[in-house]
Image (cartoon, rainbow over all chains, first blue to last red):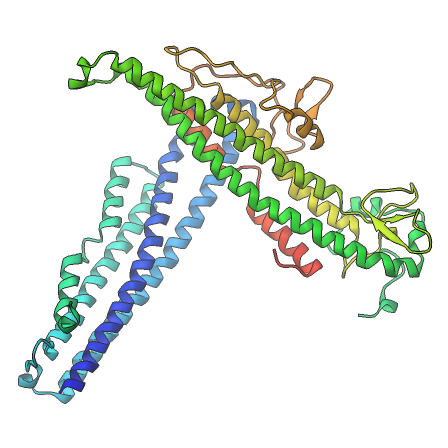
Length: 195
Length: 306
């Protein structure tokens, strides 16, 4: 039985690794988002000829700056799209871990055994529950990120600083992945390792 | 590849323009005999590798100096704007403190001055980078040393007016002759030369910022030297016009007409200042894609990865 639990813990360790990958993507995602958001906020100032001051003596500067900023924005959006794709890859891994888990459970074990507990070690039901929660959280967060991305693209045409700030909070917060809940899941699964 | 396979005359590179063809020396230079060609090529290759590595390093130094300058410029703008807003600010309980606003203003003014000094030193750094790039781009030729007895030696300076330093326009590595390398270097360096003048305009504006409440720093004009020896550096890069005794005016393209004066705005608004910072960041004259392309093409030709 202990060996079986160990196998399940292994699955959650894999999930933990995937979360670290997600975290690294999140750092890149936040930075791309804030850069894109700053450019969008600047676009209006750039399009106002009065705001060029002494630069107006340089012929063509307005178009050149606008062009450069738009190029930069395009690069950022492209990079965000790629990161989004990588987020999806993480979600797929979580899904697979969860699906494999529930299949193993169905094939091998009775319900009673799944709830069997040895000391502080988690029972199999705990492990499966953990995998299911992690999958749900990351899937919802991925959907939120996709919506934020399309909202951002819409704001390029009609920038509103308030909306951009609200989006920024959501981007940084990741409301679907509450830290304490995640921590709790891992605390239960790896209870014997807590010192 | 064996020496005997080299064609006798200059083979135009795929990227060659009419200018390249015109500049390859029409009369055979003394260096074009096959033995000296064999000796010239390694020396020229070494030189090209060195100079292009220098150009590539300069590009990184430029990025560093630029981002330093941007940080100083942002801080400078922030302390200037704070000074402007302080008279309108509510100080609450702090009102009772003696001369609190005056002290705050003084402090911010000092801050602004220190950022101004830092900004100017970033500019100096950037000019130094451009000077080095210009020098490297002018040192791509490899001349024969005449005074060295039986041993043929090469140098970067020309001693014989018949020696164009390109060994009669033969290719140095695979396809390109010296002129082709020069054209690439010139295109690259020109971007930085134009950008430094645009940055100069921004620095002039930012360094002259002053509030009415505090004593004015010296107003800078386009013809004023921003640091000791600036005009020597700029002349080195042919960015200084002796006829009008001031630096050439900023422009975006070589053939662009410019208005013949640089006007100063006395009290730029926050919006204008934001625009200045955006322009600093945007580096409109530096076409990053083209720059990467040039470095990649040259790198492939001289078998060096930058």
